Length: 256
Ligand SMILES: O=C(O)[C@H](O)[C@@H](O)[C@H](O)[C@H](O)COP(=O)(O)O
Image (cartoon, rainbow, N blue to C red; front, side, top):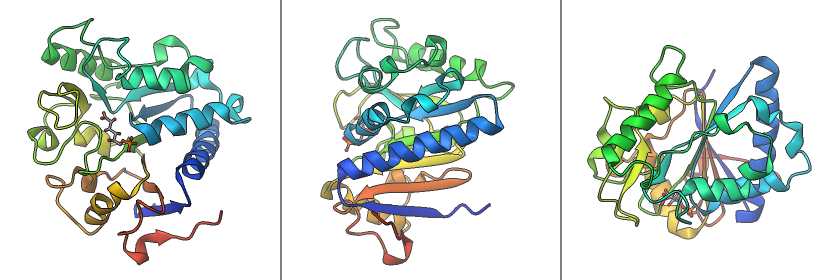
């Protein structure tokens, strides 16, 4: 099994989210033919949320047996449960509220009104991962979605911050995010990298330099997305604007 990074370019954000949604539905159906359950890690951000909305809008949405899919998050803003900033809320509105996924299979990070102490909230999510891990510290993730910030951050792992370097925990509390809100919870890089597939979704010219640097071999500390590499497949789904600094040889031809 090769594990090369692939870049698939789409004309714009709408076609990108439609194509990722279609791939997600097909891949999930395929995976469920071979196994009992599939674990998916969701991302915040406008592109990730547009993908969820496109899955919801797809006529093939209900071909997936959602009873056997579990959802986790790569990161969360540490705010009250009903704060519109919550990645959870955005994902529920875009997709999760509209499908037949059992409530116990949706695993949001704790919110600040449930658990006031951010370290305790991180420990609580780590325990939830452990309990679903079947003997490991966390479940085997099949597909992990990641948005990418203009600074190259993924999940809530920001350039130069200690959280990018954490390898001895599964969940980290972030207190000084350069992007508001400042307090966040995030999976650590080893957990993200354990996923069989990482599907990065990015659109817009403000992402071009981070993507170009990551693919050219920048350090994970400087450009965290450089460390986003899944066990089996890593695919960058990008629009033309975000792709302007991608080396030609990495571009996989797409037909649209
Ligand atoms: O918690 C956050 O602030 C977001 O989740 C963030 O990590 C987002 O995924 C990227 O910044 C990409 O955002 P866009 O998809 O909106 O460009």
